[in-house]
Image (cartoon, rainbow, N blue to C red; front, side):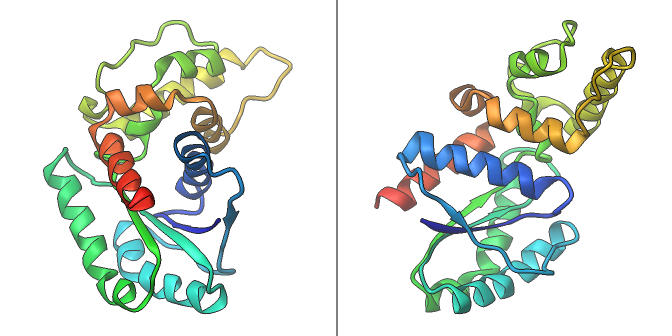
Length: 209
């Protein structure tokens, strides 16, 4: 299955979402063969840019690869669920109206409450396993954290401190995010994140309909 993923940043978000989507397609839909299509020299600089420019990037990809099956677009809500999530999702879908009218392709929008870090923080058990930090509190709902980005940075700083006297080099913040999405319990993520649960629910409707 050929897919495309557009997100706010190649530096952090993109690779993490690629890992997450690969797992979702395999574990929820038994889709094991996935080909990720990319455009060279195309990246987005933040939320506004991915919302405005991703339809053009999708058009270019579809022109090159007629068998493109699913397009995923991710952007942070920068606010609370459901209002900020709804607003961001509506903006993305509005920008893609013309493209979707012309092309037969599945389309899925993911909007984490506040930002992607709210999804990353949903399974503290996995974070403790990876970072070896034993003093982290579990979040019943990671989307209730006022600033998930700061909380993730705080955990990362503790993680680096744990490894400061070790012969092993710590993971970069990007590598840590990637590893969390590789190991996170997706069912638990649905329970602790309403925005992720909605993303999965809508994706199931799109793929199975």
